[in-house]
Length: 114
Length: 429
Image (spheres, chains in turn purple, blue):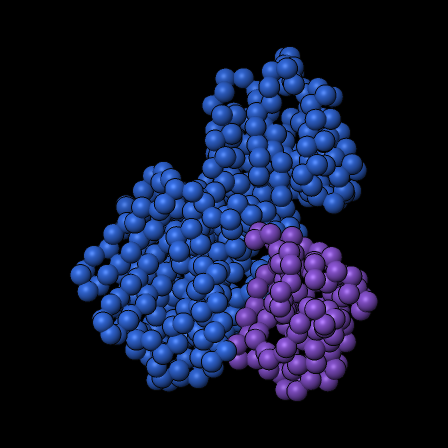
């Protein structure tokens, strides 16, 4: 799957912004989506290499919190432009050959309903 | 306070303007930041060529061709336009002549209309002060500060200040650092991120030195394991926020020092805004990811960064301390090897396994931090007061307390991709 194909798939959920990165990758930022259980919305972003061989690194808004007010214990935040995004590791198999980008974005958001 | 900021390239160009025996025009293309106050960050600058301007007894005038060329360059790069020239004198704010005022009324609205999404500036400097205007779209603001980030930091203030006799507490320092240096120190703002073993000592020493304002950042609370090395803590402060214990310590030492505290971990959007305009950023964090973020942040906004860290490995016993001074336009923490993709990956793996980061649970000794903290404060004093004169570029010091050796390490030539990508790019990077 290419960057363009991934972004096209993600675009089924909303507008996607492309942000070039110093390592040549592209950060694709999906406009804010509802986060079940938290009563708020968050953007979802993915760091995309030229060719996706596996699940790309994912991000959400840096101030997103679970219902109980927490974040994953391996939570890390980073700045892109003036935005603060957060990321963490979670067990989620995703194969670019068979799975859709929109399903991955929804899987990322579903982690926060706890 | 609206500000124009730059690095050594801007300094060299301004010095040419100031040293010339005729009126010169400096043309700059600037990235920018709209976090809080307007900030323009000079990326490219040059003096106008003789065929681009003409001079008469009124002064210097530029041609329509030059205006067009600058517009095309600014539009192509997405940057704002800086126009600067010098008036003679020093010690007080230069006043804009009638010609200057007319030019401001013509040129700034022109660029503001053609390139409304980026700020533009018209600046007049003399040896010590600056005056001028910045324009974004139809809005115009007075220039608050013109600053070149190098060692020492050169600041052209936009307001004149009365000279007052130094209080007795500053007199011994002034004998070494100079009265002007002490005055600069009293006006400076230093950000400290991480108030553990090293950061708390940096805060304590800067309070003694009499720094004007400190912004203290740490999201942690004092735990019993911190008592062995964190200055300002005691058993009674266990459970208190580290920023509050540090603030109490600073206020006790130097009631004149203003202190802002942020009990949060970098980065948050609020912290981006608060730390963007500090004169020096001192980072004493124990994670690679936050160190990487702070490195990028300092690069983007042209903030001098002093990073301090100590790692003790128990078996075999080894202590590796470092102090990195990162000057915009020179080597960064990634160039020096303190940040790398492999280290970040290793830290993430540690997080996955339920450990906090690479340094979680590692040994710490109060005195091992002390020399590096003192050295960090000395670097701050060099930057602010200029007591050591002109020092070029970034510096890297390594400290081995086992051997009692503090040595400067030569940085390899060449710069990493982060420097070139993020350097002075402002909000856009």
